[in-house]
Length: 331
Length: 264
Image 1 (tube, each protein chain N blue to C red):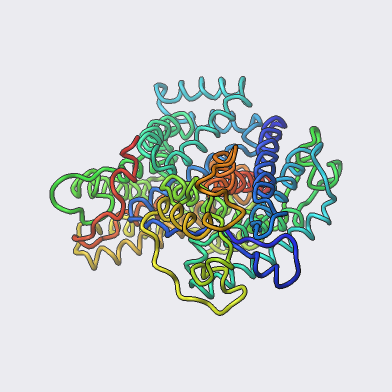
Image 2 (image 1 turned 180 degrees about the vertical axis):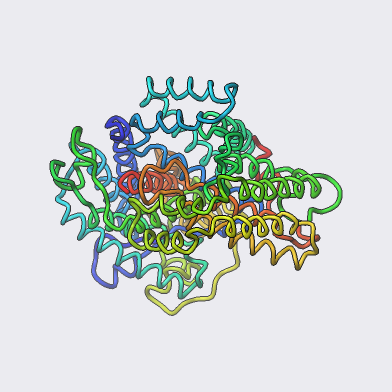
């Protein structure tokens, strides 16, 4: 830390200028860097949950709305949960927000990384059901442009793939394979992106004005520059619902298969995945509606980018820079 | 509205940060020859007081204009520091250096005071954020608030990782530039040409401790003599440790991100 003198003339000022020793930064390996990014998104999530809107009835109504169209076995617990939240709004929302903040801080704090990642999986599954109605997967409302199959399930997926353990044997071809192995990691990627391709082609999403309506519906409350982008994008896809759905589905299938291709091709396709994810985040999700206020999370865009980075091919000989203990063995 | 008690808790946390920073300034014993005072402690002290006043109206101290001037000066100060840091150490100073996070904190505070929009019927000034019954305050240019919040969250997470990775010692590591000279290129640039970067220490804790004992404890009056421990030297050591500063920075960064996001 830089320091300044507190008294004396100009010469004394210079003599008394000091610093605290600045130790070298520990080199991060790719998995730890991705864990920190995940921690940052959890922390952002938690802070967003403290917004004024979340302490209003609008929050419980939003929860109740996710029950619509779901089978009774899924929908009834959501309705019960929404009623409970409505009755104890301040207390429960404070607890929800604090849990998410603690998950973020816990993942960033090395001794607690395992506990926090495990807790984040349980929490994410709970929120996927009670907070997102399984992401609209069962009610036909899921769209890859608005966060299907539920942004929060991608948090759980990332927690599994970034678990701080290494499988014995052959070195992992990419970071996501280190904990679960290359076969399982590739299969999870395939399922996720093929599901997005499927959701892109559902009747609700391929209707002529479906994409247009979704994008145009997010304009309200956005800053001028973002509203302009959304307006332009909406007019671009007006009456083009089927064409957009097919284009998206093709892109998603290519991305899904990309991790099975040779390293150089896989890199190109992962770049495509990152670009598509960013386009979805900006145009399809409007940054999770954060800039319009009342957003519960940044939605799926940044998580998909993080996921793609976890599948980025690495050199086979690359050794982890941090010892396992540094990544949470102590926990 | 975000509950007032939540804002009060955060205001108390910020007062605690301000108290720790004040304690660090006093513990540095600035009245003794050779003592040094960190500009980060001064900035933490000011920010803690300003943020407490922003979160709880009853803790408001200075008018908004005064705070705008204070944070404009701090922003300029840390900008100069960062530029010097970057000249000496390259752009990596932005990620690993100490001044860049403080520049972001100062700039975010300046933005908050300048961009505040108080709706009709709401209380006047930043302090009204915590006043019960007032209309919700918002910030102009919400994109900037979001960008600041993202960077603050990023630095908070990074600091926590580095703190738990023992990059920052829990023993004092203050040294005068006059003693270490070229060994501290970041600030050596302030009074002399940039010096080459020294070899990185073996580990953060060991290196910080050894460097402190080698260059500071030996003859720096600000650091107690190793052979004659002073009463309360352990507590003073912990207070003056880099870990204490980083802990304050984590609390401040997270709280600032909270304030920015709830006012979007």
